Length: 170
Image 1: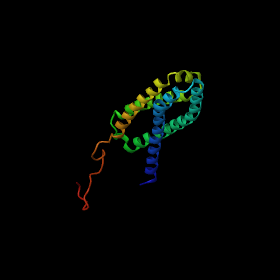
Image 2: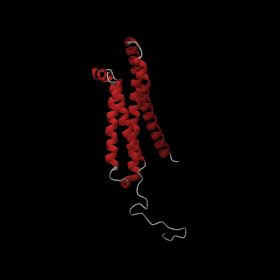
Image 3: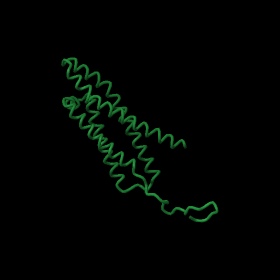
Image 4: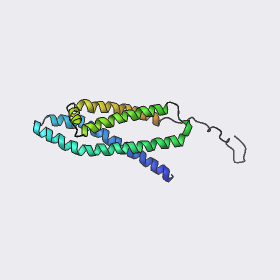
């Protein structure tokens, strides 16, 4: 395995780890942290949310940064390796995936943010966390489709015919 292939594999791993961290945190917040915090007195609930938001915001920003960097790198590796062999719908599907991801990033950033808009969104945290999970499910579906797309089989255009050991064309 070449150094470029190892780096490409490492980039894919980082991409998946960043996504798993962000999605896992979202599921935890929606299914565990919010319901548990709802049982606390108002002042303790606010203190919990503030402390959790401070910690979670750093993870959200790191995950978004890694997802953007590794996602772009992985896209260019695929485009470079397959050149014109990808189906016509690949780039539009990738574009939809990117737009959905940007929406997820915006919602996650706002929920972790300190602005007045972020505070308003957090009054309906369950709605926005659920929305993000739905968007993530769509992203995963598109990602699976893109990942299983293989270039057409057979020789590349203008390729030399294969030859046997004796030099005969196959």
